[in-house]
Image (cartoon, rainbow, N blue to C red):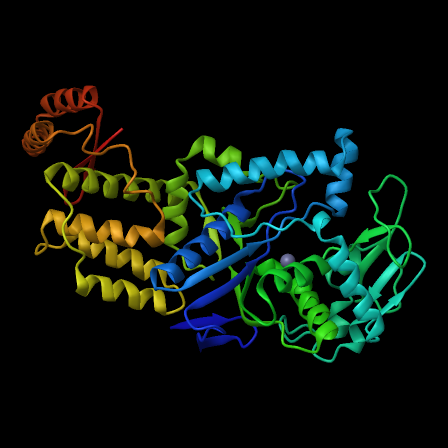
Length: 451
Ligand SMILES: [Zn+2]
């Protein structure tokens, strides 16, 4: 299979380090507040990628870090008058609930920074020893100019690095402007740990270098994250890991496209900021998954009411078909021709929009039995994770007789609409509504699903 490697900037053949296995690290949340819609989009994208690998027969080990010590954590904890540990516990709970609601499979390991301080100190010591890091009054810094490969991931040049946002907003003095903190010396009101450089806490980037290699070894197969982490975060991860060990850090870099809201950057200042609990109050989480799957993971994804509504309608239709096939009888056989088309789409850098198109070919197929359609669509849903197999509108609610009755009413309503007998059509809609059936009118006639 081929995947797009952000470092090589091209599609390359995927060859796992260990046959049949994939070691994958995805940058996780800083738990100072609930995750937002942009995070949801990235989490879903990588969940689909993880599921796709498993569908293709790989055994995946996924590691997602939890940043529980960070400038933002300290600021928020002080604001709430609680410790960063209390703040982290609260938001990790929320994060896990969000993942479960979004049907995102949990990582094999969710390492927390505060539980890896010892290993972090060891790597910083190694970097000092190797001549890549230096101590100042306020911390230990990575000397970017010393690392030859700096910029290889993001393509950024050192002088451009000087204007890099995070570097600019870092208030510490440094020898070189693009140098970044590995260890920050204690400041009043901050949680600290003892280290060879006195009391302090880790800088932000070092955790991912430490925790990825601890759980996946080095190099490992895939490092993922949202595109906005490519610089400086991922660039710095490479510098730290490779300077500390002299070994290659990661085989393939994968970045998910950035989320926009109505074509604009999502930000609190623009008033278009949406967090996951807010969006889940508005939409079925499976609608968000369907919507995410219709846009390539690398493309920019635009949150717009109209595109979400379109996803909602499509998913409603799909659930309607599934409920109908279910009610009609058992589960048949997965169609091998469509399955190989589906696999082909996945093996081409996780072409989810194409894979979804194959699913609709199955739905619309005039040749397949309902039972085989059901089997095939449920098989594809192992990747999409739309929960079609568990969806409530199942045979428990629709007996065969009820299904026949619903079909009859739907047909009658279609005829009434054809004759422009709107009163009768509405009357039937009302009857169906009482039965818990939602009806949607499409170009191909009406489809129904259960509430
Ligand atoms: Zn990271």
